[in-house]
Image (tube, rainbow, N blue to C red; front, side, top):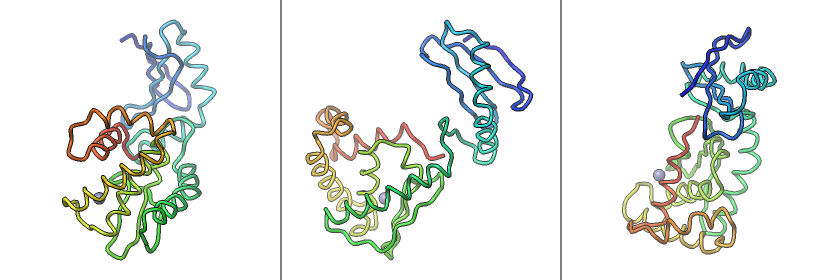
Length: 211
Ligand SMILES: [Zn+2]
């Protein structure tokens, strides 16, 4: 990999690198490793630096957050923007899935943490991680249905998995026309796992992690 170090007056040390695979300039903020600017192979480093300077305020804030949180955040997003989007969408979505599949929960709260996507208490309160706004809609629904299923089965035993798989299979059949659901169907059809829909979604979810 070809690389270059640039010192920005505000951001400090910035690593620039060229990548044959990238099609556009991207900025990543890495905890501990600072800022990395990747430019397509035939783009100059100077253009990478100009791009970074045009987004310096975002990069500065992201750098501050990364040292605090030890994780990456996609460009242009902040925890607060994710929280607002999550509050506007997830509780309604949870209510509609609960109604559709006959669940009753007590309260839903949007949380921010890096350890789980959601949780369900014995009192029927559901917590959802604002990071769910960063994953695709089928994966969001998967987590929501997972937490709803805990209202009937508090553990991850066989009856929990059997019910969740039944709900997911139904949910995917109903939404099969939608492209983001369709993208999972070939993997589900090929899967030999005991719970093919759950397994496929669980695998896809591994590409993400809460920040
Ligand atoms: Zn669970």
